[in-house]
Length: 296
Ligand code: 0GY
Image (cartoon, rainbow, N blue to C red; front, side, top):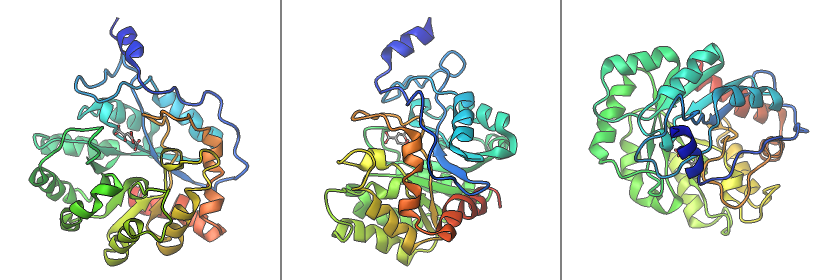
């Protein structure tokens, strides 16, 4: 019954049912370093306070996409529709064994025992989400306390924010005591060129703080032009060229909250050689960097 209600409530498009086989062959051991699992709702209900209701997108579907696209491993990121209940994430990690790692979302009440259990299951990071359409605001001191605790486990912090919020967030971000991975290139406005001051401020952040990494992900979210995402390529390529050892790539499957179009994941993979333009850069982006962070 509950499942039927949740599926009826679903307010985003269903992931591509039949993505094409990419033309680009990822290097051996490639990692999809940003993807999610949603439900299935009858096993893992969505959070009561979620801001969107996804369609079910479970671990089996994720792992079969991984194989279809020619990837070897996943980094699964807890998404806001599951709130702070990480059961679906942990279940997927336990099924994948050494082939997946996780990024969790926790509150100040999380116990050390819970953190240790997550660590054993393969969690290696915690996500702080500042995107207002996705989450209610969390006080900075709460985030800083969590940061200090997860640092002891050797975890890092993933941050998700809109480009317009970068300026105000910089003092906070600089206080974080771990590696900090910024989701989706800090969500640049691609109607402005990469030389625009807002993207340059993001580049300066990475240039001046070598604990900052970024995911060159989500052309489908950032594009104004649509596939094959020509307008996003210069932003991602700039970051790969400037910070080749601090960039990660992921599909973002199953693409929550996409309203304009649902990407074909094969087309997303074919963006890779356009942003990482040599074998060396592809090896770093898809294998060496994620392995260093998630499978040290
Ligand atoms: C993403 C992007 C989105 C959603 C979430 O936690 C989430 O719900 O991450 C988004 O809507 O931009 O990174 O997958």
